[in-house]
Amino acid sequence: MLDSLIELDKNLLIYLNSLGTPAFDGFWLFITKQLNWIPVFLFLLYLTFKNLGWRNTVLVIIMLSLLITLTDQTTNLFKNTVQRLRPLNNPDIAGFVRGFKYSSSYSFFSGHASNSMACAFFLYHVLKPHVKHMWIIFLWPLIFAYSRIYLALHYPGDILSGFVWGIFTSSLLLMLYRFLRKFLPKNQQGLDNPANS
Image (tube, rainbow, N blue to C red):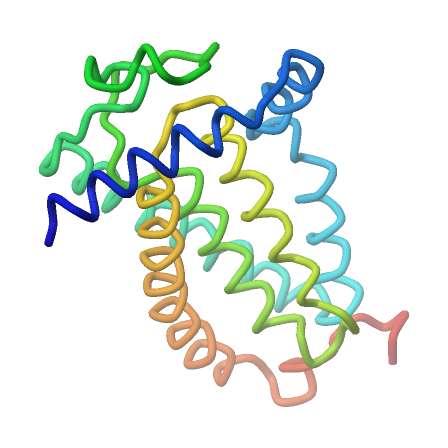
């Protein structure tokens, strides 16, 4: 059963990776770099401040910092325990995939997928009562993580597992966030930005 899933994972990667063309290589190399997403992060920070006020924004930033630390470190623990070779480092399929960005770390599961989904899931639940169409935030982890398949840095199974782990860790931090919010002054739990009063 496990061998069949692994084989399916490899074949799906080869198929999805084969859809790439040189015309789009630069785009996906740009997409896969975290720093290039800073404008999105700043916009989300603005939405948080605008809708929740500065005290809640500080709490959200603290929670996101804890969330990224938790998700990133546990992801690295999984990688170093499972030790699955990245597609470009796997001699069984390296000749069948296109790739331009090599990494010596392991593949299972994707840190890009787990961290981005964890943050997106957290912010979705925090901002959903205040921002219409908040579901759009999930385009970020989907596009971000797909870049890893396009560049043959991860298998689809690595991405899906990363998404599941990100949702799990985010759910834990959401419970902590909701508990800590109770200690904010009552009139500042929802909206403490004078501009929005």
